[in-house]
Amino acid sequence: SQQGEEDPQALSIQEGENATMNCSYKTSINNLQWYRQNSGRGLVHLILIRSNEREKHSGRLRVTLDTSKKSSSLLITASRAADTASYFCATDGGTDKLIFGTGTRLQVFP
Amino acid sequence: DTGVSQDPRHKITKRGQNVTFRCDPISEHNRLYWYRQTLGQGPEFLTYFQNEAQLEKSRLLSDRFSAERPKGSFSTLEIQRTEQGDSAMYLCASSYGPVVALHFGNGTRLTVT
Image (cartoon, rainbow over all chains, first blue to last red; front, side, top):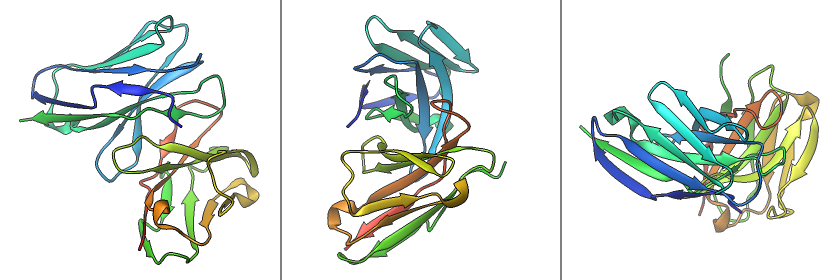
């Protein structure tokens, strides 16, 4: 079963534009994480935001968390072709394991 | 830190055969997770270990699946009597402690013909 749903399922933008992906989840959480996956590869951890945090930044990434709406967003600023990948949110659902969403496929055109 | 390694990268097998995959986690990580991912979907949790103890196994996991982590180091995932529906990418991840950042291997892609 999958805890989260990402929106949109697919996103195509030009280099230099910003990309925004949203994640909704179902149960209470301790933290929410975002991962990137290049085609045919494993997932790479991008950022973790705790349930008592509202916003977090890491380089060109900005993550927000709204626990009242059970939603999060990932913003990638000034996108590059190398950002082309699938992006997944993952939540712990108050347990000891991460449950992943369905992912957003991002295509950045040069 | 040499990362999480998985072997083999690809496995093609005939329906009904048994297969075994291996995962070597980052050496100081005490937690090891197995996930399965089908095309266009997110990773689906299968099972996890803390050291050598298997703490949880997904209710969706058939009895044909078994995992071990002897001595709390590498782990193996075995699928007995494979079915075409078992075709997927099998991902291993490790971490030091619960629900912190997971470090993933590049997966084993299984094709059952």
